Image (spheres, rainbow over the protein chains, first blue to last red):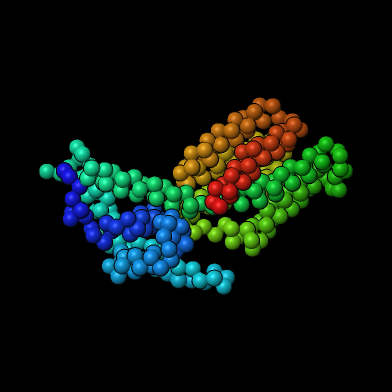
Length: 101
Length: 198
């Protein structure tokens, strides 16, 4: 089966958002700065992508103060986790010899 | 060509997930602080037991107070603000919490063995070194497994081997040997972990 992006969740199928979802899928909650450093993007760019995922109900944010420093922690919602799992399964099916019929 | 994209995406997903799981554990400072505290306890024990420093009270009471101070010092250092800040993992995960609980279980077990076993005289004090090495081996092994860091997991075999040697050949030299294990298989990895986290 060929790689057909139309079969993939558009919202996740962007390099940065896929990276964000992967990071969040491996954790309970992750700080903004960690996601930014791992995705090698800027604060503004990452915020835009995070907002898209948040608007879709895939992720949620919790803001708190640690000392005097504001910290934003992001986590996957149940919907987001299901969407990510489905996305990965779809990708795996697209690998040669593992295509669905 | 198109299949490559799926391959690349899956590889990226896997890599990011592994990195994130490892980041949930910021153990470097823990290893260094507790290594120093236990090291001080071992040094004080050697000074008293070898007779280099006269014991201020009975042997058992001196040891109990010495180790209560060493453990208290370690606990106090962990509450020291800069260390707490460094320890604050940017990633929260079940694995990270399990690692913390694992060390809490190891520490609690060792304290019971020492303060109750040695304190009540039912366990000879010289057995504390091999027993501690075996327990630390469990803690290290579980840490490596849960954090997904293979070389940390493998350090456990060094601790277990060291514990077995000390069980087979007990003596005053165990204190120095334990110190060596602590330095090479606990504090040095702590420094490496702390440096790898930037």
